[in-house]
Image (cartoon, rainbow, N blue to C red; front, side):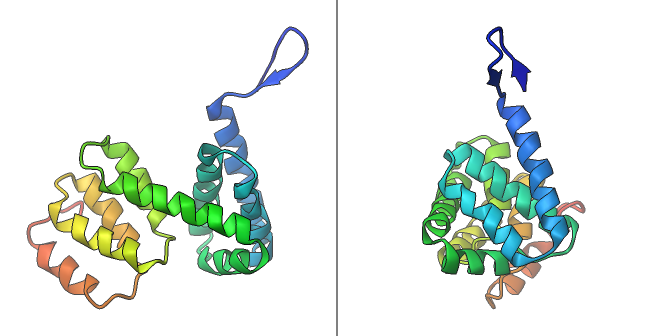
Length: 171
């Protein structure tokens, strides 16, 4: 954040992202779903870019501490329907982004990371359909990571089918 001539504060997207990441990590350290759900409740109050940053930061912090984000999302659905709807909208936007073949690879990878936490079956189906077509190892890894927590019986054969043809970093 930088201070202007009149003493007002302006924030760059990078500064906001860093702040959100730090705060998300602090919330997750507390280690309960209620605190995480309370932080996620703010996705309905901010713009989509900040909401995405918040969700990804909380998800990353949960990953670092081997915690589940799913229980916090379930609690969020019960306690804050508006925020839960905002999260689902973020998942829908990510689903569209991951499916865009002409989009930049990094944006498709970010979308796949976000979809790791989307429990909707439609997301799983799209991810499964994209994997055999993916040519970039980084995108393949992102798709596999997005599929790893799903319980669909079609996923294991899909992963094994492509195993031999994948480069070592993907395997």
